[in-house]
Image (cartoon, protein in one colour):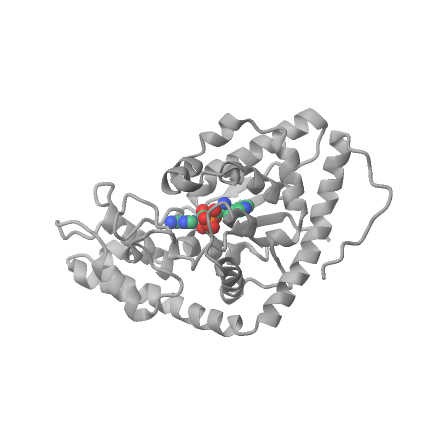
Length: 340
Ligand code: TYM
């Protein structure tokens, strides 16, 4: 039997996800998981680049694991694990750092945005973030990386580093391709539709969280910023309405044309209510299932432990090759690290 190609993606456990994360990432993970050997990580080391409140990272890591499962990721078929449980990620980051130039990192949009937002904590990790992401991807000889549009620049760097390493040391890494969905790859804020919807937005009305209940979802859509011409059409000069149409079609499977026809002659109030109901009807069962799974921490620990073991087997095959290629002396003996 032909071996399946590798798909890898990750999400940071940095808070309750939004429908942006869902549409840009998780929904596609579910769609693609059986066509590939799929590997889904919780990028917990990435999360440390921003200050975390006491206990939040642990709580959010369980939350995201439960959400992955509630969204239909299958821990038998796919590999689900926490990045920090496979030390090869940090180890490969170091090697890749030695072929990365500071200028490549300082011009990354996300680094510039986050530096402005966290002026009091511009740390080396924040700058090195894309190199850790490249290590995540390259360790698994990944062919496909499903991501939202905001991660495209980081994926480009992963490709550049793979090519650079291969040129310098000989063929080692697969050069990964991005998978960016044609629609909803960039879900926008409900309050400022020129900006990306983000879970770290200070204004909770700007995003729909995967934890919002039906009433909250409908209330937030009612308040969504639109415009004053009362036409429900997709157009550049109507970012608010266009964003709502994108969300509506992504949740219902309808096309933009179908949606425009459906709401022809209707008012914004009607439209917003329908968008809210469509989103809630998908999110509500996911949230309930997530909360059910979340209650069983032993199960979540087992899923992550199994996932880390399976991930490590693949990751260390690549890392050993890399260490050899760069000229490090091979270890003559293995040793066991005591975990407790
Ligand atoms: P993170 O945790 O910020 O976001 C997770 C995924 O959600 C997508 N996304 C969006 N998609 C559409 N509309 C939005 N408003 C929106 N907001 C977020 C992101 O593009 C992402 O796909 N660096 C990554 C995590 C990561 C990773 C990796 C991804 C670490 N290592 C290796 C792929 C491969 C991140 O910050 O995602």
